[in-house]
Every structure is written in structure tokens, then in C-alpha cells.
Amino acid sequence: MSSLIKGTAILTLGLFLSKVLGVIYIIPFYSMVGADNIGLYQYAYIPYNLMLALAISGAPIAFSKFTAKYNSLGDYETGRRLLRSGLLTMMVTGFVSFLALYLLAEPLARITISDDELIYSVGDIADAIRWVSFALIVVPFMSLWRGFFQGYNYMMPTAVSQLIEQIVRIIFLLGGAFAVIYIFDGTPKTAIQFAVLSAAIGALGGLVTLYYFWRKKKPEYNHLLSTSVESYDVRLRDMYREILLYAVPVIFLGIANPLFQFVDLMTFNRAMAAGNNIMETDLLGILNLTAHKLVMIPVMLATGFSMALIPLITKHFTRNEHLQVTKTLDQSFQLILFLTLPAVIGMTMLSDELYHVFYQVSEIGSEILSHYLPVAILFAAFPVTASILQGINKQKWIVINLVIGLALKALLNTPLIMWFETDGAIAATIIGYVVAITMNMIIISRTMNYRSKMVFRRILLILILNAIMALAVYFAMNGLDYLIGRDNKFLSMIRIILIGGVGAIVYGYLSLKTGLAQKLLGARITRITRRFGF
Image (cartoon, rainbow, N blue to C red; front, top):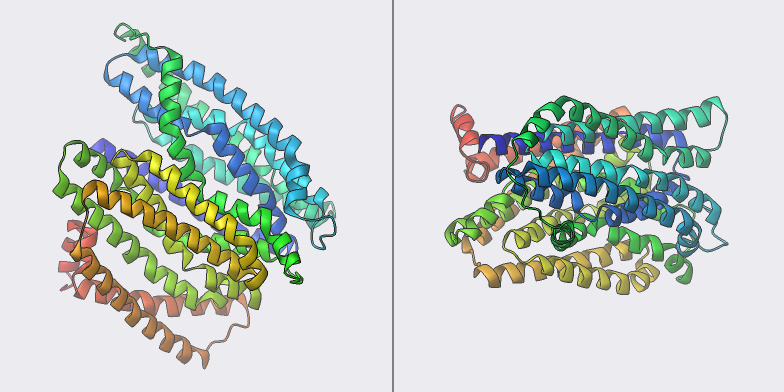
């Protein structure tokens, strides 16, 4: 159990640091390319993320499962045979995906915008998509290699390579953009086209890191291979069939958010034009990139804690320990709301300051951010409910429910955007996610006969505590208005620290005083809080 906890902690830390860097780098990048050009960046990355998911097909996770399975039987030969075959397969699928995205760049750009678009041209978007497509040659290969290490319960290569990949990507991105604009006197659009190539350069950095770990561990793995029992001689075709069945729900779980963004990418600009809405600002760029980056912060805070509970569900469900499954579900749902809701409320109330610190003073940007932030609760809830479905062997419903939610998003997006502009796109996302999450919960409830009055009472308590916190934040904001304005980024940062500090202290105190934090966060937090009289 200790190695499992250690492995989970290493992966979580690596992923968290990588995500944090992925939020922070946008500040200097935004200041270099400007508000009028930043949206071009996400026009390239959304199609890339979808094509990447298809290229990888959830294989690394399934691959680690199979490697671990045969290793546990002492058959190290089968895992190595699958590694050789898998790496070759990923090279082929990666190259085919690169070729497809490269060739489809212009058609995708034409679907995204019309020829008379004022902000970006079809050529601008097509070029950005072509540059980012090169990463598809490397990333699938690298991802499967990570899966091999994980199959040996060795999580360090995955965590370190993810972090190195992100660091190299950001250095190349910021350095390249700086060089294009300030040294070679190029345009911001050229800088962005150069910057999206950073995905491929970062992947090379991750690949070099994995090679280092491979050289380090190869003697040990070769020794295990020499002691391998007689191979089970499992046909690769049978393994790939099972991998595919296992991987499809994983794919949909991983690309749920990019799929919703892709619907916006394909419909937003045309819907705005059809509704005779004049776009003087790249509203889609704000919605899908600058605001979205900040919206995902509360999601990071919640899912790391919640998802750690999911493996327990699989174990208890397999053993028919229904009481333990119910307790785990109770804790998962409470943790999502306990961690996400206060962050969402606080960030919504401080949306002006946040947008100023990360980007610039923008009434439109702040308004979109404040309206979009509550969706973070849904972004956190969907992967948790979907993971629970995986744990109770109802994987097919992840695909079915997501497709239904996505279909609703696609159906409602255009008319809602025509009527309400960006609020319409947000509303369509909310409707799609609510339907998908509700259907997930119905399946969970029916399969497990899950009912919990205690969770309802706890949720009510969380709502009350957040209402009190919001009131304290409101008074703090109004009081601070007389002392500190938002004249520059530094003052906005001071406001965030002071007002956010008030909210954190009030919410933390109330959570500890009522015993809610101790019940949700476990024995360790209880031992600490007892020293302070809680």
C-alpha cells in the first residue's frame, strides 16, 4: 500500500506542478502577443488535443495495466514484447495523425471562420494548426513509454518527464515569441505560429528524460526478463482488442472538455455573424483560452483529492463491500463541493482583479470570466462521476452520457450564441455537462442503490459556510475599495491576497469549527487541528 500511495503522490505532484506552470506562462506570453492575437493560439491547440487523443487512444493506461498484469505472473517477456509492438504502433498512429491534421489544417480553418473574418485569416489559423501538428509524431510514442514504466509501478519517469516536457515547452515558447517580436522584429501572429511548435520541442524534452530513466533501469529490467517464466504466448491481436475496449472510455474521459471547446471553435464565429453581433474583440479567444485557463484552477484543486479515492471504489465494488463503496462515494461528492465551491465563489467575486493580474484591464474579459467560473464545478464533477462508473464496471455509459451531453451542446450552441453571445456558449456548456453528470449519477444510483441523506445535509452545510464566506468577502472588498484601487497589476495582486485571505480564513475557521474539514480530510488534519483547539 505504501508504494501505491507513494506512486500516486509522485504522479499527482508532477501533474500539479505541470498544470501550475501551464497557467503561469500565459501571463508573459499574453503581454508579448497582445489581446488581439492570443486567441490564435487556442485555435491550433483544440484540434491538436482531439487528434492527440485519437492517436494515443488511451493506450498508455491500458498498456500499463497489461504490463503490470503479466509482470505479477512473472511473465516479463510478454510485457517487453508488447512494448516493442506498442512503440511501433504509436509511431505509426502518431505519424498518420500528424499527416491528417497537417492536411486538414485549411479545411478546419475554413470551418472555424469565414473568409471575411476581421480578426484572423484562414491562412493564420491553418498555419498555426500545421505547426502544432508536428508534436503528434513524438507525443504518442512518449506516452506509451510512460505506460511501460507505470506497469512496473515506477511512477517517477512519468512525473519527471511531464514536468520537463512542460518546462522545455514553456522556455521554447516564451523564448521563441520574444525572439520573433523583439529581436527579429516579427509580428505577434508569426510569434504564435512559432510558439505552437513548442508542443513538439517539449515532447522531445520529455522523450530524452524517459531515455535517461530507461538507461538507468534497463539492467534491472533485463535481469527480470532473464528470470521470466515461460511466456503465456498471448496473441498481440487479442491484447490489442482488449486494450481498445478498455481505452475508449478513457479517451472520452480525457477529451470531454476539449470536445465542448471544439463545438465552440466550429460554431462560435459563424453564430455571432448570423446573429448580427459585431466582434471587435476575439470573444472566443477570451472564452476558450484566457478565461478558460483561470476556470481550470479550481478544478485542479478538487480533482487531485477526489480522484485519489476512485481506486478504492474498484476494490470495494469487486469485493461486494457496498457499505464501503457508499462511504467512498459520499466522501468524493462532498470533497468536490468542499474544495471547488469556495474557490469558484472567491474567484468570481475577484474576477476583475484576476483578469487584470493575468492579462489586462478588460471589462469584457472580466465579465466572461465571472460568468464562466461556476462551470468549474461541473468540470470537476464530470470526471469524478465518470471515474466512478469505471470503478463499478459501467464504462460504456461514460461514452453514451457524454455523447448525449455533447449533442445538446452542439444543438443549442448556435441559437444561444445568436441570442446571448458568449453567455449563450457558456449556457450550452452548462446544459450539456448537467445532463451528462445527471445521467452518470442515475446509473451510479441504480447500480449501487445509492442514496445518502447525510450527503444532502453536508452539502447544505457547505452552502451555508460558503454564503457566510461570500458575505465576509463582499464587506472586505467594499472596505478595501477606500484604501486600495486597481490602478496597476501590483495593487490588483495585493487586493487578491488580502480579500482572498479574508475568505480563506473565514471558510477555514468555520469548516474546522463545525468539524466538517476534519470529517472530509481525515485523521491527519484532525491531529493537526487539535493542537489549535479545534
